[in-house]
Image (cartoon, rainbow over all chains, first blue to last red; front, side, top):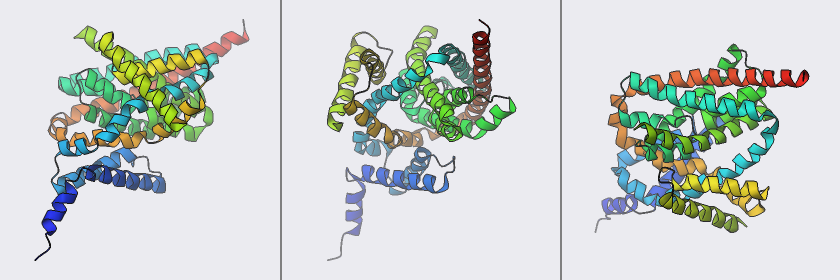
Length: 238
Length: 120
């Protein structure tokens, strides 16, 4: 009797744990690559996403099946989003002195970042679904994904647009701020946090503690403000 | 400890989901939960040990939780290709402009505030 290699392969690939297994594996590889190189392009989420798409395509697994087998990770995303309230609260206590500058910059910068992106996308002829997905691009991914879905965009694409924005902001941000004479650590942090969320915050933390604290604050304020106001704004406009 | 904090987080999300259905159809449940937790923390004035433990462990693995939904891009390859340059153009230009605007504005406001403090 010949061993049923084909059958065993099918059993493994379509096992409910296969999706979790490859996700954990790909993520750890991606994190190791990032920590080894510290290269900002190698964002773990982006790299694991590419690895996993490769594995799924070569094994002939549909996205629906993979999504179903990783349901357990998806369920935890809700409590993790709620947990963002804790760092936001801790950061809020630090800004008493600079409350008005922070608040004004958040409102003006946040509205500007969201509007220019949608307006430019519209001017360049992107369709409605893509526009609604790009609107929350300056916000940390779990919030951006929830918001995009809420206003008629696509969560998966939102996660990618968010990553692209973050990586771009982190790469060009510090040099750009130098060129325009922005030297205050608080101002640099706010700018990086509002536009480039978590990736920007990690760059800001490398500059100084103060800069990092303001970036973290800007990121969480921008996230919550977008989550509350963007769906409202969209429902008023349409 | 970890479990107790996790229970709080789940409880707040479920509360958020209930409110989402009852009053606020435009805000997703987890976001309502986040706001509720923030209000609760402000009212209490501190973050308890169980909650801080649970939130920091969950947030450490947040990127991992985001991987499966991000893989969903493979379904939308055609939509991305159709609008590729519009997407890239809008993201890049908007990102650069808002970076500069936010940085310059914040710096101006900080200067103005400290100038006002020096000559009252």
